[in-house]
Length: 150
Image (cartoon, rainbow, N blue to C red; front, top):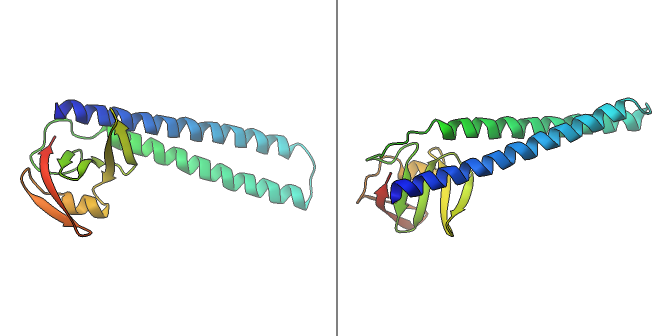
């Protein structure tokens, strides 16, 4: 059951990333068209300021796209087998909820149950890394008992 849950969470995460990629691509295309159209119109200080703002927005959209593409790549390269110790690619069930140690995209809901996707470099991720089933760790005054790892 837990292996199926891990797969479902990863699929949901991929869905979130695909939506981010589509959104960033659409924004980039729209901004590129606007910039190119504006280039053909009037010149002057207002035009140059507007163009600079569009370039900055275009750069942000490109950065978001590249980040989402990198995250999707990282997610697709995670180890898929069962793990005995919490590490990169681990789906973890604790007394305080589910966690996917992978990429930091936050709360994912699958079958009405939340799972938190966090990176191993995040504060909670660092505390969880290396734990085994039956182990526990403390973070911000809360005790996390590790019940399952996949």
